[in-house]
Image 1 (cartoon, rainbow, N blue to C red):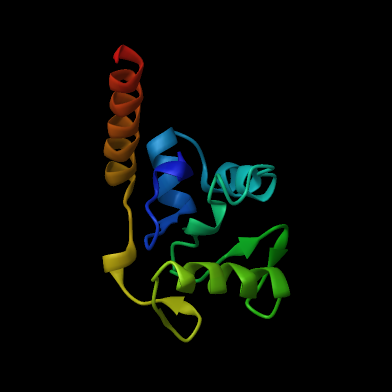
Image 2 (tube, rainbow, N blue to C red):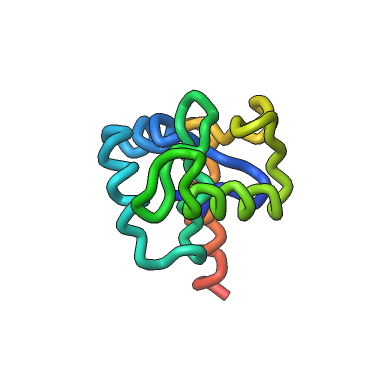
Length: 114
């Protein structure tokens, strides 16, 4: 599902969990164990407070891995105010995620038919 989050946008662990009928903690654990990064862009999933959350098993803005997550998001156009994402214009909600996944699935189906 996090592959559906476009570059320059983020979603929260909670929104992803809501879209999956799961828990934010389970989403966090799955992101932590993601063996396919950055193809599966787990760096685009952040805490509901718009703090970065964790990255690659590390937590806290002072960690090198979390600083790398911030740099990756900035390179994609996400803006920050200090260490928090600057506003909701960068957010993808649970409903947005569901729609994006449906669009991707439809595109895959269309591609298989041609």
